[in-house]
Image 1 (tube, rainbow, N blue to C red):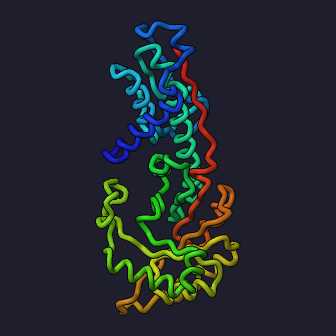
Image 2: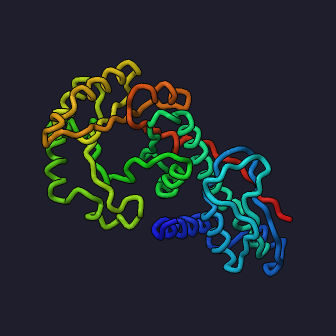
Image 3: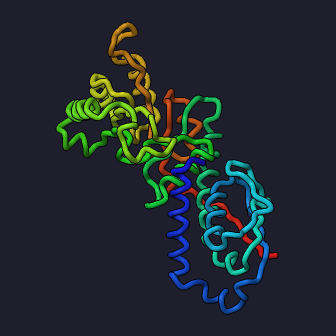
Length: 311
């Protein structure tokens, strides 16, 4: 895990503990057990899935007890089943009880995202289609949730508004059309450069040096045609039916910008979004697109159930 993500974990865990302890502590635990008493506990999976969030769990207990020990610990990305011990922890009794819910919240949420992403990736296996996330994330947890998507085998779309041009309906209206919007983006890109090195926040390894692309959201063949003529890098087919997607893909592949010996020739990447479910993925993957984005990976993934049991 890179340094940037580690800093994010440290900060978010600190905020979560402050939220739960309220600057005072766990009144129930403080009343029942001496602070110095030692104990051990196990975190056990209550179902099948993909493990994610172990570093968050470790950080929770480290912040409550710097001398905490982890005799057993599994790695993110491992497949787990009902009864799998994902982590064993030994340390201060009060630290274990104070950190229990915060640790399980991180672990359940991130493992849920990784598990759902794994199911989505499995549904399109062998097709070459990539499964992408979106910006529909929990405020403050985006970097962790997008990390969980990667752990599950998916890939990240843009991380924020800062690392990619994505021209949507409102941008098109504000600019006065697709052509004007794309031209404005192209002009701006000439000023700032074509890689992420110009963005100060790009300390994260997943962002640093990434090429900046211009993508346009389109809803029909007319808009597809106009976007192609503008020389965009990527086309996002939004909320189209299977038949419409098939027609758009065929049109795009037959009308690539320029010719193979032209300086303007390039392959336009095709993505689809809107109304995508796990059940629809196999049929969508057969339509010739390059990627499918799913907001549900981060905003609707069911939490994976874990229990922390004191010994």
